[in-house]
Amino acid sequence: MMATEPKPEIHAKPTRRVGDGPFARSVLIGGVLVLTVFFLVAPLAAIFAEAFRHGVAAYFAAFAAPDTQYAILLSLFTALIVVPINIGFGIAAAWTIAKFRFTGRNLLLALVELPFSISPIIAGVAYLFVYGAQGLLGPWLEANDIKIMFAVPAIVLASLFVTAPFVARELIPLMIAQGSEEEEAAVTLGAGGWRILRLVTLPNVRFALLYGAALCNARVLGEFGAVSVVSGNIRGQTNTLPLQIELLYQDNNAIAAFAAATLLTLVALVTLIAKAIIERMDAARAKVSGGARH
Image 1 (cartoon, rainbow, N blue to C red):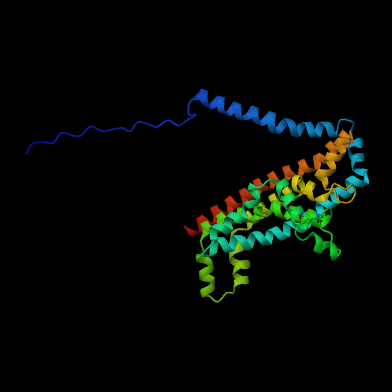
Image 2: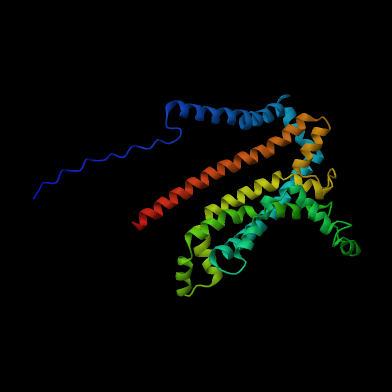
C-alpha cells in the first residue's frame, strides 16, 4: 500500500472586523466623543449654566412664581395618574401577547406600539376631533356639562396615549423569550391566574417593569406636543411644566425658564441612572440564577 501524503494544514485567514485597526478605532471613538459632547453634553451644560448665571438665590427664586409651582404640581399629578394606569395596561398587554396565540395577535401588537409612530401633535388633534366642542362626542359632553378639552382630563388622556407603549414594550420581548413553562407548571400545581401573575410572572420581569415605569414617568413629565394641543395653555390652570417653560421663555424670563428646565433635565438623568442600576441588578440576578441551575 502506498503511504498517503499528509494533507497540508489549511489555516483560516483571520477575519478583520471594521474598526479593528488602531487608526479606524481612534477615529470612531473620537468621532463619537465629539458628537456626544456637542450634541448631548454641551446643551445640558448650557441649561444649568444659564439657570445659575445669576446665582443660587436667583435660581431658587424662579420657583417661587405661583404659575411655575402649579405647573410642577400639575405635572406630578398627571404622572401619578398616568404611570400606574400604563403599568397595568403594559402588564395586561404583555401577558396577552406573550402568553396566548390568537387571531389578530400581530394586529394587537401593532396597535400597542402605534403611539410611537404617530406625532404627539397629531394625537392631540385627534382628541380634539373626538372630545372637542365640534368633535364626535363634543355636543353630548357639553349637554351633560362634562369638560374634557382644555382641562386636566385632556392632559391625562393625551399623556396616557403617548406613553402607553413604554411599559408594554419592555415586557413583551422578555415575556416571549421566557416562554410559559413556569406558568404552566404553576397551573398543574393548582395555582390561579392572579397568583401565577403575582408569584411567577411579575418576579421574572420586575426589572423590565421598573425600567418601563421609569421611562413612562420621564415621558409624562416631559411631554409637550400632545399636551400643548389639548390643554389650551391656560396659565395657572392647564400648564404643565414643559408648557410653563415655553411661556417663561416667550416672556423673556430666561433665568426662570432654564431653572424650570433643569428639573426635567434632572428627571432624565435620574432615569438614566435608574436604567444603569436596573440593568446591573438584572445582570446579577441572571448570573446567580444561571449559576444555581448549573
